[in-house]
Length: 263
Length: 263
Image (cartoon, chains in turn purple, brown):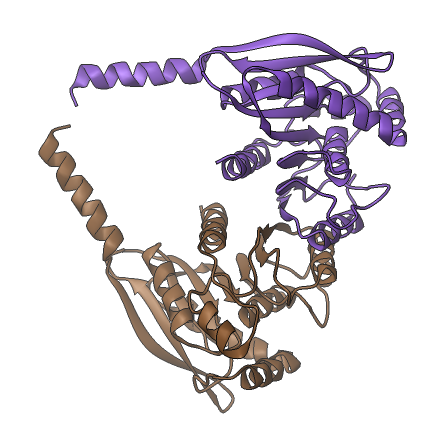
């Protein structure tokens, strides 16, 4: 291969990797009289239909962090929708409000499911999305949401929870989980997750015969994927910390899972 | 790069990958009046000290399958010792004998530990081994053995169990496990492993604050790493089956773990 051609190839690759053609747009969808404000990301330089991935936000609500993950998924060749589980794009600035918002959603599972499925339908309707190929990932509260939706039998091929709450109000009945793969990325030093929650979840998934990967990541605490975690942790005196290694490992595990499920 | 140089590099790489310089030798070691017959594999083309890995056999005893795994580890740049947990290189041809041999070992944990540590010491003494870097992997009965040794606080950096028995007579006390990483590769359809065994193990490891990866592999049944499993399963009417995908995935997960621990 001649040197100029090699340089052209290298620079083309770098340009694509660095900038891509990811387009993000705000979208709305509804359940009853609630309007949700989501964010849809896709790479316009890719032609053809691709898997669609929902991103469920932390307990702070639909914010830039969830959007960033949607952009990252779009760069990987998915179409991603960062959902809004609270309605009206509502966000919290204080753990007290965040706790109230997230509890309200979890206490009304039928409405939570309706909001989640409205987002899933919107995602499936996108011309860039193969409606037969969908997954959902979630962070913190969002991790609990995606596991709950898997339990509820929502039609998803794969689910990933990152530092999600693992406590659950109910367990999956036999045969209910449609997801072919479940990834649970947990910080081994996360004080919000009890060993009993881990055992209950792994027993539930094993009983359901689901293929899963439970990653208990060395030294990681809650919010290990979010570079903004340290500041928030300091502000509210909470044990939150970003961990680049755990972030990278869990993201790679998610990519491996998607590669397998959507091959 | 000129074309001839490129071809030389490619052919050198292929030669190394395909043939290597793995040397296997039979070794003996003892506890009390029991002599164990093991197999040590190392790649003589590699200079310098490297991590040492113990390989613990299935309930059939120290056989060619365990030796093959030791050779594979040597090809990856480790020095590997396929141990003999039964003594005298004893092997079983029938599940009844295999069950009797493995139960006898598990019922006498001090002796099991002594045999395991005698092997570990022999491994550490090899000139090719960095005695500060050791791991153990095990298959079936051997998976139970390596988890038991981790529980006992044997000085290992990493442990991997492949389709191992997860039932345990006791659980690790806080602070006992020295292994920095534990990989448990389990067939999601393995009838010999109960969901309650999985939950007990994950709760134990989480309580101990150990970093672990519990891989519940889709569709895989017992003995999924052993190409000889199908014939044995048919012979004795046991639900055993080789699964190339699960074999490859679990081996890759082990390599990732070793890369991380021994970096």
